Length: 469
Ligand SMILES: Cc1cc2nc3c(=O)[nH]c(=O)nc-3n(C[C@H](O)[C@H](O)[C@H](O)COP(=O)(O)OP(=O)(O)OC[C@H]3O[C@@H](n4cnc5c(N)ncnc54)[C@H](O)[C@@H]3O)c2cc1C
Image (cartoon, rainbow, N blue to C red; front, side, top):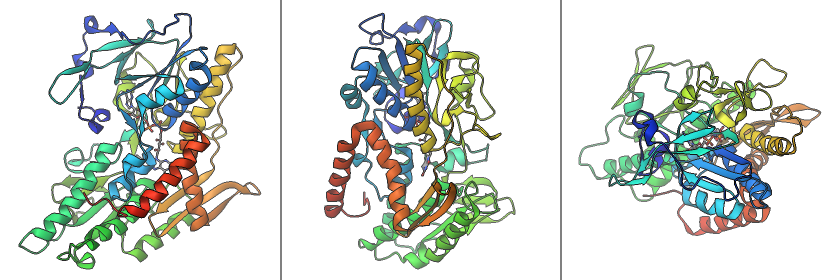
């Protein structure tokens, strides 16, 4: 099963299973009015779902274009929430968006499927067949035609070929993986509570590899939630003695991509609350009972989370000759058009987009996905009007890291006199939440986003603060 499909029970046939003769035009793909410009967006994540929602509202609903989303999942959850699902402090159901309903409300078509290939001459996207748990086919291998294609299939965890990662470590890139980790965590606590022998060293240890935003946020959040779970009557576990959370980073400091002041403040806080931080430590192997470091030391840990880097999905490297870089990202011009085909665009984590004015590319972050989706909406309007496309310029508004209930730390760019400003505490927390609210607002409008906030505030008054099952 592919990475993408792991989040749900259904299975897809891989590219190897795809015979050209098996490929049929999707029965539900053609727009009712054949003269309509066909916009197909592949991937309904932070970037793709915002894009189809806005295009559907402005063009699809008004019959000015046909807008189709191709996506192998049935629901969308904004990825920056995954660490909280893994730690058990967030109920994914409160935040998930159902693709079929979203499409119905916002004037676009949702076509269930995973892209496994592309024919640029025929202008067709190839989708894998999908199967349910009993092996019955849900959708056949099929193709969907486009006039303009936007690829927004995000990124996956990069294990850099480290031994044992695929088998023993849990990545955090899909809802299923975050939930799997949480189940393993709660199960480990229940096992420790009921077993006759004392808790083994490593049995309730969590090693998190990679102290970027994901790993760091998970470490802080977990430190709190694991104690909450134990506090619900698991009295044979002593959190001080039995629980250990180790955050391991190959670079010399945590949050290596962020300004040093944020790294220092975060490192200090993590150590204050009792998270063990190991910087300059390279993991060489992960096994069933822990991980080995390059200096030969071994860290015993039943639970290992791998969040040490990203790459774009492999499928991009074989998309009918489109240019990709060494981590499979589609290379795009500043207009977001792929370098070898002006009718194909890429946005979000899967795009290597020039960061105008710097030698770097735009970083794989939620705010970049949000900005690129908004820029892409305007590009499509220009395209339909026949006016020239404009380059996208990334604006870095800063970075915020949520350290569970303890603090939120970060910097806001261009806030005062155009310089970065260090922020911490309540104000930082409110700014952190505003990024998620912007995503919710882009998907459902201001009223719906505010109603969701109120509904969740009430739910939190009656539910336990952590997931206990
Ligand atoms: C745990 C975690 C925490 C994060 N925290 C932060 C944060 O605090 N701040 C921040 O700025 N960024 C954060 N990020 C990064 C941020 O989530 C991403 O930059 C952002 O989601 C990228 O959006 P996207 O649309 O490119 O990809 P995604 O949101 O990943 O969406 C990709 C979509 O494409 C679909 N897809 C994949 N393959 C295929 C295929 N072959 N065919 C069809 N569809 C496909 C997937 O199912 C998915 O729905 C975090 C990421 C993770 C994993």
